Image (tube, rainbow, N blue to C red):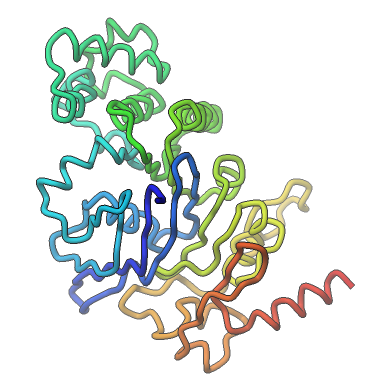
Length: 330
């Protein structure tokens, strides 16, 4: 039985302009110890997907489909039972540690909270465990700094503290949502190395959300490219990097800065802008921005086509993409 099985997950949010499908028919399976990356522009549905897994969506959200954790259905589960799972079986490292941490409580108290709620640890036992966690994630002089407040730590140290909180109870699944946002390159590498090492050490499954294709390439075995709330391409990370097929995936890779490019040259961009969720076409979400758009793209929801071993892409113009790629190689 897989650790996590998501089938046809759809999240509809109520907006001032009407209902918006922020996540559309997302399906994937995650085994114990497996790693999965979610990639795409801001607003493509990555974080909403993660929040749906955690049961942390806004009250006006309507969720359909299925989320099963070792066979247990999470969609529709009462809040009290979701609280038993959050922080225990599923941990999450949030995008911005300064908003994830409470400024009026010490970091020791905050890291101890999941231990108190899920393990019943209090007093000296909880304090000992928290010091061990802070030390494990690289907080110097953890025994002394356990009583400090979030503002007394650097950005990188605050991110390490949120990682300690997420790992406190040894979850089966770790969700890392842009865990290196606003950190400098050196600290980014340290944080990613830490997460990768802890995941391997504890045998956890991991979902890593990132805009950075390099981060995804180095840290996950499988990836899903999302646009407009839908998964447009998925497969083993090495396969998607080597044989990207969906026009949106090609656009993301084409927009990357390149070493050796002429100085002062303009970066390649994807035409147009990301539409509002309420304005997405009923067919392919990328229709209109894609240079291969034909009238059918606006009305036809493309099924996932097999484009390689265990690799799929949702596009009705894949024959054209393949022909163009072949012509370049000829």
